[in-house]
Image (tube, rainbow, N blue to C red; front, side, top):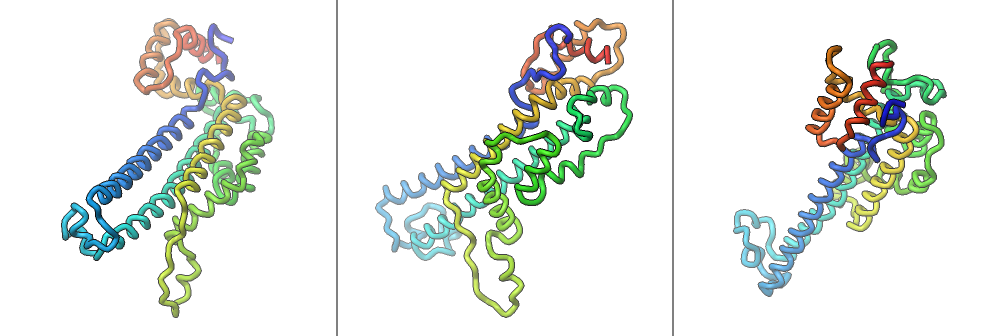
Length: 296
């Protein structure tokens, strides 16, 4: 251990990959809230005007005839608004599933690069930081990422456990909801929320409604994404990543400065980290990191 630095002890409570996941999740929540506020505002305005379902849309709504020509009445407009609200719910699930899969892919790659001994069933037997410093064997993580992000969630959890050991029971408890998430995402992504097999029946002319998904169900599945990502992050961060992300950041911009002391390099590193918005480290921690790097 070097001063305030421990290679396998994370300075952050989460990986940087999780922090990015969280930012996208927060953005999605903000977008959804804006939509819900607009929806409530629209109906509140109609109520204040005393509008009824049978009123002409152009007389009750303020957007002008050009934008309301598809609707004869307020009820026509409301029915379409409800379809749009359902479409938002469905696409919220598409976005949540994509965000979770992107995060899992990043975390698997990070865990392997930090702790490549995982590939041989020998946790922490090889320090990935040495490979950063000296190069050497190339690590191909693609097949492992694929095994953890493709197929049903039984296969994905099995892929994660082959690498990182038994998963927290909290993750496994969400298996059914994760399968709902995956199936809805596939139906919406591939067939706009409809039965894709119907498209192969060339003799059929029936119009099929898109799948219905309540806002409550969409919120529940989004919450599952957050819970699974958080538990998975704790598992991989504490056992396999430690402070590797800070080391990798240092290695990515580090230039050979043999005439500078560890303290001066630590000050430069602290400044560079600050520009990224990362949690600030103490100087003693960063000096310890640099001494560790020099000793590799």
